[in-house]
Image 1 (cartoon, rainbow, N blue to C red):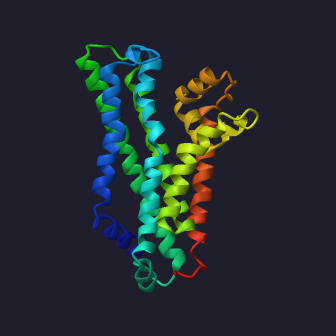
Image 2 (image 1 turned 135 degrees about the vertical axis):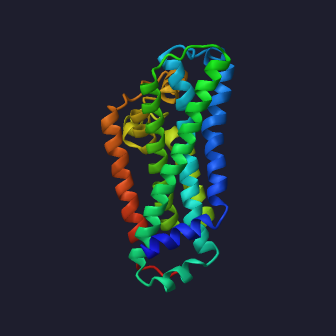
Length: 264
């Protein structure tokens, strides 16, 4: 508990939480508000309107395309300790590295959940307000909207933990940030374009997230532009299990990687 309290104090003594929550509002609320106010039906190519389940799902689900952001936050949070050499003082204060690393993992898992709740909550508020401004009846019920937002919050938590694991493994901040951006923003999208290889997309973090949220806009767009048959998404429950599996692997990496390595 002392290690956890120390991590909480260290985290909230920096500006990272403030900037993270502002970014969460931008990735969730502002993006959703812009899409909803413009109207998906006015996009090019046109998409279903907010008065349909598909259109409301697109307005909220576009936030899923920015889930690499919590991964970046988790990566920067961990690698900054190596960059500024404060990790040594942490391990001197609590010599058992495993205890420190488990405390970090727990704190950043909760921090990822808070990020996800802020992003999802602001997206939900923005969608409802934009629909009211446009005098449009949303095509989904309140229960369906809450379920979609909860799925986004869960996905944000998983991506934050994945970012922490990448940071713990790479340690160098520039390298870790490059890995996160290169994989989540580039490599996963490229794999969807390779015939035969794109069948593994549903098993990757992005594909599992799409299975969970049922947000198929990206895969459908790729299939339409390339005439490639998109890999069918898995059931939502299977997507959850895959994401939880990635979370478990990331947690093991985040704890085990720094145990026997020199700090320098």
